Image (cartoon, rainbow, N blue to C red; front, side, top):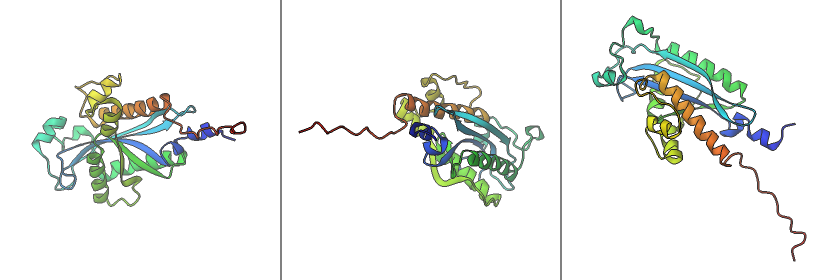
Amino acid sequence: MMTEVEQHNLLKNRFRGYFPVVIDVETAGFNSKTDALLEICAVTLAMDEEGYLKPATTIHYHVAPFEGANLEKEALEFNGIRDPFSPLRGAVTEDIALKEIYKQIRKEQKQHDCRRAIMVAHNANFDHSFVMEASERAKLKRIPFHPFCTFDTAAISGLALGQTVLAKACKTAGMDFDGKEAHSALYDTVKTAELFCHIVNKWKDLGGWPLLPEPEEDNTNNT
């Protein structure tokens, strides 16, 4: 039978039954309804026997623009995807990418006995909106993510590290960050996952988790 500490060290109990999945997307603009989703990466997380969070599985896809998608020139220059239609990208459609990612999420979510996935992302509202819009275009019914709740590492990093920019937060945390690799969904997701794990584990080391009840005082000798 598990002790109370061992129970707290289960992933399903760390985030109130939620299964955290780190996501990053690269897009052709800021409007999730009109602008193309061009790249997506997901990193699932796991917890070891001592209750420390760590990256688990990485899933990455280049994505073909949906029919009629808007492509902002400035956005393509920013993320380095100069030709979204190039066959060299090996891009798949939105529905294929999301179905495969969701399939893996549901598999690991079940393994950890979590009741629902929750998105972890840097400036999470942006990534969440693009994933949800793409899921709607693909007419996907079983979306594992919470419809509006997220864990935003920009906000969490601001609290824990005094930094909100991903590169600066990583460096403040003592992590390597290669600016030349930034704005790739694969690289940014991996670094965001490492950053989130670092903050969660640091909080544990500082005594912030698990939240165990205070021992009851012995009042038998009090008068």
